[in-house]
Image (cartoon, rainbow, N blue to C red; front, side, top):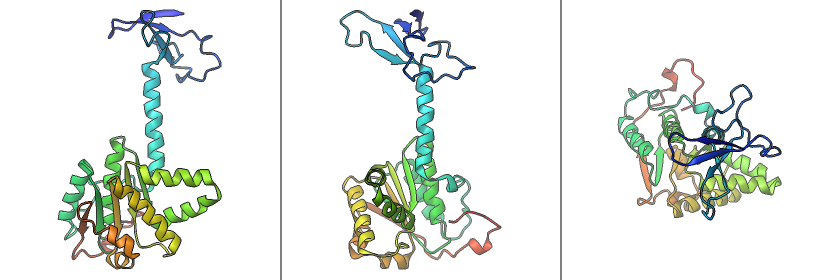
Length: 261
């Protein structure tokens, strides 16, 4: 076993030898770039007096911590379902669209410190989805867990997962408990007692805990929602409603684009 002193600490650090960690898959250092601190082991032990609660326990090396953080960031980005909206930011939003300035200001404030729910209501092509994705991308950049989905896609995926109880439970729990949930196109789903029940369960759970949630919808689809769902969205203590008034569909004026807003 090798000993090495950390220059930022008065504690003496012991490095596990390779034979000590054989059979334990903790070597995360690349073969061509072995960590000079842990020599590729990924874990260390600190020399402390016998009887100390931490005596004999291992501690992760900084290289392992960095790799674990990078892995976590990759995982939350993959789970966020924002790949198709990665270019939707506040910088790329067209602020010159008439009637959106107030909505943008409220969305920027929410992105800085999400509290409660944000309901974006407006016609097709007014920028609702872009702004919702911009908030989600900003929170994702802050290492916050995010889940972005359209309501029809979520219900389809949830229904397909019924064949696998474990998958169904995982997806349902993720949508319920994620730091920020974005439900795009509420009301665009095919109405049924099952879909109403699942949406109500999801929204009631997040409402009870006041978990940050963003919902986008067009006015006529809001009116067509189940009465219980519509009532949940009128809770003024929980929901901040942003209405895009007199905003016309700007898609016909856009240059060729792959983005749906």
